[in-house]
Amino acid sequence: MRVVVLGAGFGGLEVTTRVSDELGDGADVVLIDRTEGFVFGFSKLDVMFGRTTASEVLHPYRDLVKPGVRFVQADVRSIDPVARRVETDAGAFDADVLVVALGADLDPGATPGLVEGGHEFYTEEGAFALRDVLDRFEGGRVVVGVTSTPFKCPPAPSETALLMHDHLTERGNRDRSSISLVMPLPAPVPPSPDASKVLLAAFAERGIEWHPGRLVRGLDPERGVALVGEDEELPYDLFLAVPVHRAPAVVIESGLAVDGWIPVDPLTLETSFPGVYAVGDVASVGTPKAGVFAEGQASVVAERILAQARGEDASAEYGGTGLCYLELGHGNVAKVEVTFLSGQAPRGGLQGPSAAFVADKQAFGTTRVRRWFAREWPSAEATPP
Image 1 (tube, rainbow, N blue to C red):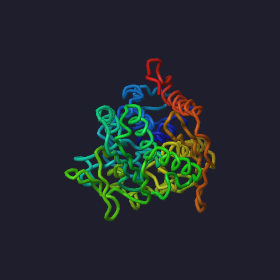
Image 2: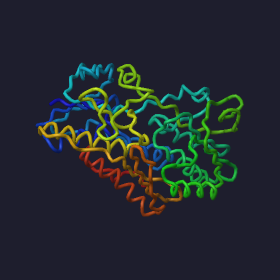
Image 3: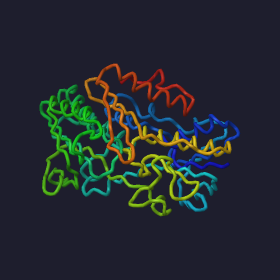
Image 4: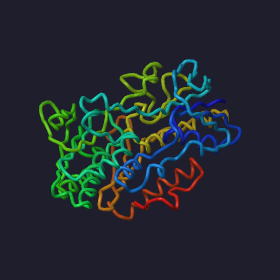
């Protein structure tokens, strides 16, 4: 049984690891991604705020040495979900089972004025470039703004505002600065009222202006203002953006997408095409677009693939639970666990915040790098957070 996995993020890495661990050399898995390596979402903020370096947080796919798995670095040119055939610039691949885990593409150019007058921190390139920008920034009006929905990792804008406060404070620039956070959500983390309450208290304590239920529709770089909602304006000296998210063009062109994303069975992650699954940010599952949810979905898909390989009926179903770590600044981290079940209101809990959870967050990354890449991380030479 040939399994072809498109995308080597949380979802793709988890599927291939689970199948390889079970079948070893008996697996026949091709993992395809256009990039050279994997970066955790939280690592982008670590680089951006000078906690570590870009080279330390990049996990090269060349380190993937898994029985029965072949990694191919290539751009996906077309997907035929009926034939389960994929065309890439490294050739064509036919699959018995196809797993689409291509994530969401980010489009800063879709927001007028953003490329000319602001900075986005959701791509690796954007976040890494901001390290030097923040190093030179001597204070002023900072706006952290979301430009569209849905967007990945809903807590990240809040974390960025809080870490920006710490950054300016450490450099002695906070007194001559303001920080505003613009989000389309009614609360920072709607599924977890406790997490939202903690964040709102942190904003109030640090003098961060909170603008809920609004999107940034554009920037006017000449006047230095962000255009917010229908008719509001926020002046800025530094604008940090969550850019527009879209399904990759190759997914839209394949016929897999409906209303911009791939619809799947929320329990099995199956698409409407037999033998084709979709997981993570590219799929419409009813959960937030975040790596931990992609990982959980991928685990279910892997179990269903393994059942098929054993000639058994597949029974694994997705439970909709994910746990993420929330940076509160001042060296404190909280743990937020949320469950999304079809037809039910999401429910979430909060642990912390606490300095003790910094080690938990580190362990989250360390265990996955060990499982996916068979190496230790961070290295002995890494800059401590």
